[in-house]
Structure formats: C-alpha cells, structure tokens
Image 1 (tube, rainbow, N blue to C red):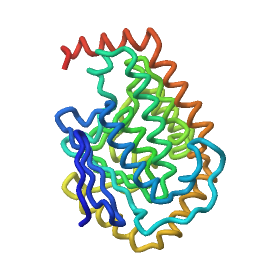
Image 2: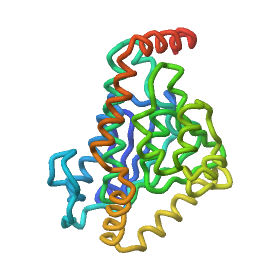
Image 3: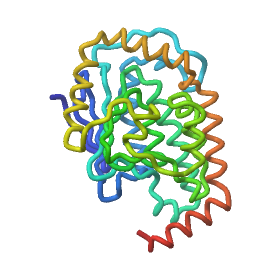
Image 4: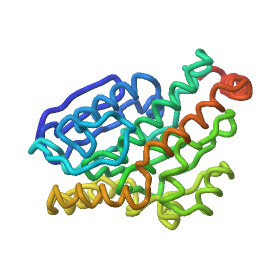
Length: 280
C-alpha cells in the first residue's frame, strides 16, 4: 500500500510504490490553490525529482535534458485527484483579495508546478470530477492522461478578475490545438467533460462520477504493465517533440500572466469580485 503523508490541503498515498496518488483534500474551499497548496504539492514533485528524473541533476530551466539513471523508488505513475464536488476552483481569491501582491505569486508558483509536472519522469494521470477552473484547468492540462466524468467542467474564467491564462497556454495549445485553445482561453466559457473529451483535453470519459475511480484504476493498472524506463524515454521524447517542457517558453508565459496579476486592473477586479460574493 505504501506510506500515507498528510498536509493541510493534500493527502499523499502510495509513497515508495510505483503508483503515487496526490489527493486535493480541502473540499470546503473547492480545493482552491493558495501558498499552502503549492508548498505541499511542490514537496511531492521534488521527492519524485530526487529519485532521478530527467534533468534532476541540472539546474532548473537550463537546456535540454539528457538520459539519466533512475532509482527503483522512482514511481511509474502519479495520480492527481480530489475530494468533494470540485476538482479545483483555481486560486484562493479570498486570500488574493486580502493581499494584493498574492495573485502574482500564485501565478508564478502555478507556472513552476505545471512545468515540473510536465517534466516529471513518470506518467501523470488526472482524475477529474466537477469544476477544474483556471489554475485547476492549467494543472489538468499539464498531465499526460486525463480521465473525467461528465460532471467535470473546464475553463479559464480568469479575465473576470483581470488575469491572463497565458501561463497555461503553451501546454494547452499543443494539447488541443491553437483554435480550440483560443476559444477556451479567450471566450471565458466553461466546457463539460464531454466537450473537453471532444477537444482532446480529456482522454477518457467515464459514464458518471461513480465510475471515475474504477476507470482511473484501470488506466493506472494498464500503465503499470509497461516498462518504466520505456515510458520515461517516451515521455521525454514527446516533450522534446511538442516543446511543452521548454523552460524558456514556459517562463515567458508565466511572466506574462504575472504582469497582469500585478496590474491595477487585477487588484480592482479581484476586490470587486470578492465583495460581490460577500467575502466568502
């Protein structure tokens, strides 16, 4: 079964096995992303990187990766799922309203996490029910395989708070195509799990929420039947070919979103949005 680790917003199971699971476990906040979330999530990513992933012995953001040896403790699969009716509603806007400088910090952390998820030496599987919005959608898009139920909702409604979703676009555009990415990023509308499956953002569509766990387990079991090193090499070359792990492009996109998050437009729109919600 592996060890279980707990953080205020994450539960990590299967530590030391070939299949590690990270469960977002703050359903009361719709699993919103704040600094505690990124601190906890990055600790999981770093533990996998330390086992010997591609580029793990290079300074972050420098050049192409080379072949590296991996230890037996390197997981083959990382599953990301969530408790409650929402996968992840995006940033913690209450915290952003209280601290005008926080939104840009969260964008920076999101850019780092999504880039590192894409670069991990294991297959990353997202299991999604309910809304995966803004930063939540960016996290899902960075995964290698996405399984979702029809209740899932995807989108980037961040223009309503003055933030550009540029941080997610290098991966999103490669994943679903430029035209679909434009419509999703600029239109601000949410798409259903079924529509996301048609776009290619979702790769396996479950019949309903009840079937999601079993469908995810079946995909994981199938992946675990493959050679771990063959999977790592395959993922590395897919990243080379589509350039979704390119640190230069990822960094530029992150900084573009950060600039909008630091603007007066963002500060006023976040404050107004939070006031309309009555501060909750």
